[in-house]
Image (cartoon, rainbow, N blue to C red; front, side, top):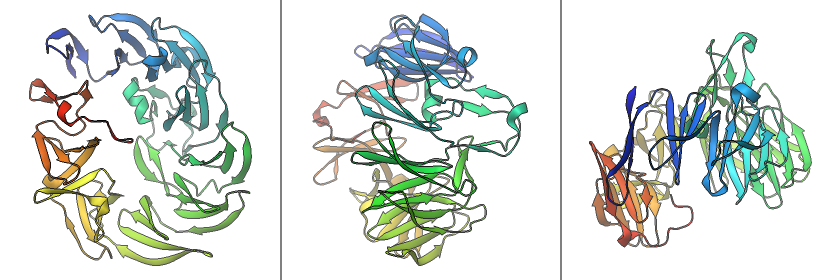
Length: 443
């Protein structure tokens, strides 16, 4: 698909430069004043003044840090999918290299401080971004069902693809790799906990292993860790990722481990053929497990988990997730945060529809999509909520409309102006009146 890449002066609105672009094979990402153009396995840094390449390199960018003059890249053809390069943004030359698995993409990254990155990719790997040094906890986080010796890998180029976590996709048989068989990184003071296909373990922030416990590799899948007192709970979801989509793997289960020793305290498993936990929520001492066709509520007890009840949901709906704190619903002239509704639960379906359930899940109704808004910016005095067509700026005290504009949700804000595209025009709105100091955690 052909199109054009245009740079517009944000002050005057004048076009600085314009060039043809093939969207099917190209990904463009701008981070501050650094513009990266990824065409397949070729990466170019573009001059922001005229759009011409400053340098070219046969590499694929995963992350860009202008403040450190650094891009994190894999030279797939030259050094393979597991050697990460720290690239100088001014010259395009490699400053350092470090073995960090990239064959199956990165599942997630987390900044531990201003210059230290943690990469979740077949384990955990810390990177001192200036020199590439750090420690690794290597873990298996994938499985395969066929012999991949005869199957090639097609590399997807682009920073955007990397941020999605899938830079290499197996080509050939479509029943090959199942990915992301690992957990979140659970922070707990001076230590952290992590689980993958084969083990759950506890480490210090220097990478030292304090304990590890083996897991059932045939049943373990994507999981979530959380802590209650001196117990680490592992909720095994019963699914993994294949080409970016969830697919059933193993069985859903909850296991509990002593936080100090790693000793398994109990394990409760559910036989769910081709079904899996899509999402979960904890309220007080109850665990709500959302499947596509039911909600299973379990109560924590000293002996483990005791089932409170199970409620079946219309199988045609295929539920995907509980509502997040960013979802607001307009009722008359007031906007209410859906997750704070004490009389209802709100669930999203796989098709993106929002359903409102009574607290016993016996009755439900579909919420009008025109009344559903996403909170994407928050300041001391105002909350910005929007959908695909408009944004409402709400007074934080009354949650009533203070202003409205045609900008869709997640419109970018630069230098006290909001920018958005409508039809064939780009608009800049001065929103300085509403931009007091942003609250921590706002978008």
